Image (cartoon, rainbow, N blue to C red):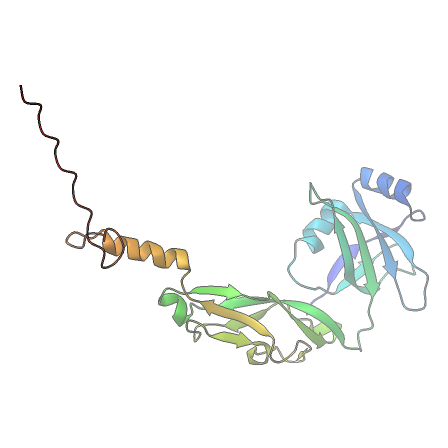
Length: 226
């Protein structure tokens, strides 16, 4: 896969105060972690980070571009991303360097393709997981995995070992782990259908319990005799 390029710069030592000042400048504070090296506080333009990295689905290899020799050209993955609970803006990111010749475990998004046979019959497609754990080289991370669900009938379940993986990726999720199923219509939907049938002309809804006689109408009171 093609790597992204992200410009970063070294920033002041970590802490809440410097991090707040970094965000006030329109940048996202973060930390770079490399094997055998001390953690390095970094910063990146917030708009560029949102456009190039944050909005993307799945895991992506990133090449750092920096005036700092120790950072320039490093290949990293986003290990952790913290977001503001209200605005949703990125407030901190951890970047971890990865060797390109060693397989790593990553989460890959699943895309369910096709209309299941069971859905045509009234069932509901129910994803159980939306990502699959796989091992692969950092340069071969799949952007997503398509899962064909057209053959699934009502009550059918597709398991992890039935998912076809891209070349170079191996599954680390348990073979028998359920991925997606087709559920029957809900009880509420069934009740609504029954009510609709009872309301059809010529099929009046039953009154009272089955086998129970309908209550007699009350007798009219005798008129007073003069």
